[in-house]
Image (cartoon, rainbow over all chains, first blue to last red; front, side, top):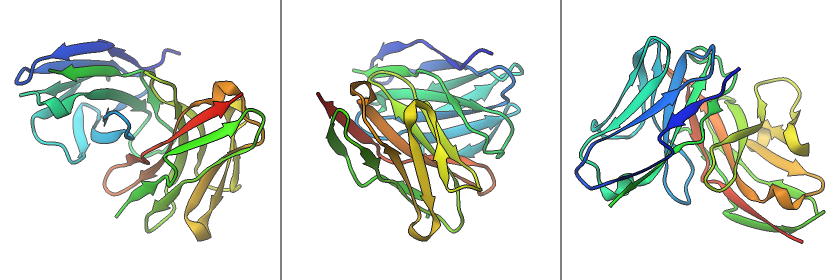
Length: 114
Length: 114
């Protein structure tokens, strides 16, 4: 059973640029959630995808968008990067929508915006 | 509003001492509750979870947590701390409302003195 894999592990971008982060969900999981963890804070919910559709979104602007593919892998896209977007971005996969059986987290992508 | 609060930002204990990390939630019902641990630069590892039933939950690495409905609390405990337990600990609640969303507390950083 494979875990959740995120790529890249580290990334440096310039303000105003766009970035794409990738996540491969755990085998058998069909729901993917993305979280932003700023330094010294707890993870904040960005959005969730279930069967290729966004079915929940946190308090993040539209320049944060995502995709989920038929194999349940996912992408997080951020446009017009701002300095405050610097954070650890975590992907979590789970089985089903709302079953509450638990989430498996990846090791994250550390994004630095300069 | 749905929220999870961890009142202690930093805690320092001596190796071999007991540990209790506090967590409170705000919700109209009982959410699913989790404790995660995060080592520097790493993703989140699940320590234990509470869904229903027995209010004392056993987890990995010798941790346990007790759910108290009357206090809206889910405190994490360990009888004897090891130096390797130094890390950031996050309490999280899974709240429903159209879709399930995992909400994290701000975290408690644990330091262990030899």
